[in-house]
Image 1: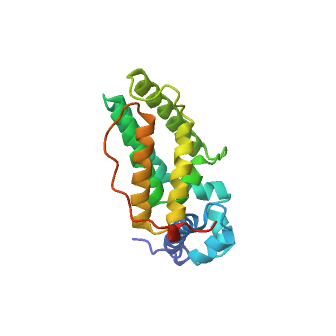
Image 2 (image 1 turned 120 degrees about the vertical axis):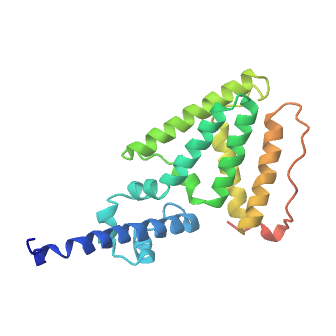
Image 3 (image 1 turned 45 degrees about the vertical axis):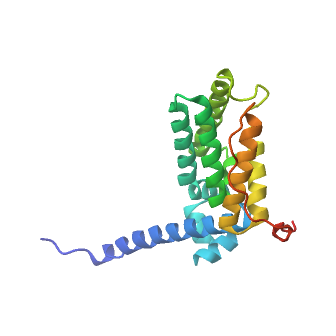
Length: 216
């Protein structure tokens, strides 16, 4: 068996180091985007990841490449929720499930909203999945309205309004568990307002005081 060329030996550790750097960068990016939004300086993400800016840019040449990769899993989960709702024979139940689950995801990972609502033309996969989500939401809205469950003047764009409102609740409350409870309450109110004559009970009111309204 021929002896291994010693010059080839470092190749495996380099690949391992590169993989580890990529994982550290993505973990740091998710944490930074959640804490500070997707406009956080790239240098701050590199510092949090323990790498230099040049290393970060070798893996992710643009901010949009980093953002879309950091939230790829969440976007896929969001699309899966939408697919499940479209497969539900009850259009209103499917619509409510999307609103409830996506808003819960939004509170759990707060940077995701900005990433999802942002346009990244060079990130083909992200844009394709986002368009697919928009088309699926429009279809859900149409079905629920045709079934007479969703008010006729509800527009698919109102989903964006709902997400922005939910984001404001999550950021204003701050603490994760309380933010989740506040989000459920808000979603309960909104779903009742979307449906004519719905008398179902709202989720329990969270113990919120004015001191929890953060100055912006």
